[in-house]
Image 1 (cartoon, rainbow, N blue to C red):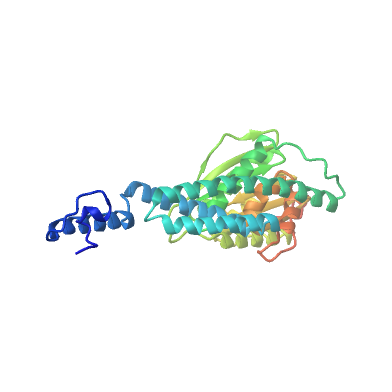
Image 2: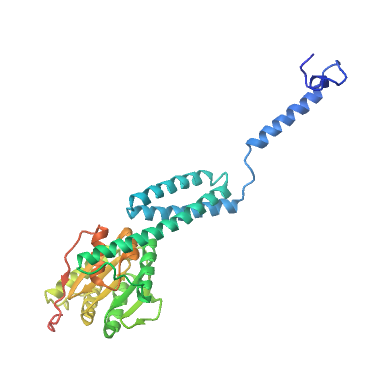
Length: 341
C-alpha cells in the first residue's frame, strides 16, 4: 500500500502512520485537480473579437506599406532591414487569431520602423537623386531648397495616387502651369478630358498663384465604363502627334479625341506644365510634350525625389527610377505656329 498519495507519512515522516484502505475519492479529486491545471495551461485565453479585427486591419495596412517600400528596390542595407520586418509581420500574422493583442504590438513596432526607413530612404533619394540630376544637367548638387506649398501639394497628390491604384473609384489630379494666364483654358480642358473618359471632377483647393497650381479629385461615374490610364495617355499622345503635324481634328467626332486636342491646344499658352490625371503624367517643357503612364513605384519615387515644378528634372528623375512604360521621345507641339489646329 505504500506509494499512495493518501498516506501522509510518505511526504511527512513525522506524521502518524496510517495504513487503512486507500481513499479513492481523494485520489479522484487529486486527478481532477491535475487535469484542470493541465487544461488551464494549454487552453487559449479569452480573446476580444474587436482586437482580432483591429489586428487584421493593421496587419493588412502595414504589409501594404512594406510591399511599397520593397517595390522601390531600396539600398542593400535598407533592403536587409525590410526583410527582417517582413519576418516579424509573418510572426504577427500567425498570432492574429490566438493572441491579437500581441499581434498588434508586433505590427505597431514594425510600423514605427517603417516610418524611420521611409524617412531615411526619402533623404537618400533626395540627396542622391538631385546630385545625379544636377550632374546630368551641368548644375550643382548643393542647390536643394525647401519645398514650396505647390511642391508640397504635388507630393501629397502623388502619394495619394500611389495608394489608390489604377482600378479604384477615386483618382488624383493636379495641374501646374508656369504661366497663370493659361490656367482657365487648361483647367477647363482637363476637366473635359476626365469627364470624357467617365470621371467626375471636383476641385480640392483654391488655386495657388504666382505660377498656377490646383488639385482635383476624380470619381468614377460608372466603374464598368471608366477608362484606364493607358487609354487616356494614348489619346493625349495621339492628339499631340496630330497637333505637331498641324492636322485639324474637326472631322473627328470622338468626344475623347476632341477633349485631348483641346488640352493640347490650351497648353500652348504656357511655357512649362506638369499635369497628373490619375496615373497619367503630362509634362510640357521647351515646346515639347511628354506623356507617361506611371507605375506605383514611379509615383512613390517622384513623390520622394523630384522637384515637381521643374519639368526637365521630373523627366530625369523618372529615367533614374527606371521607366516601366516603354520610353517615348517627347512630342513637338509646333509652338508659335498659329496655323496649327
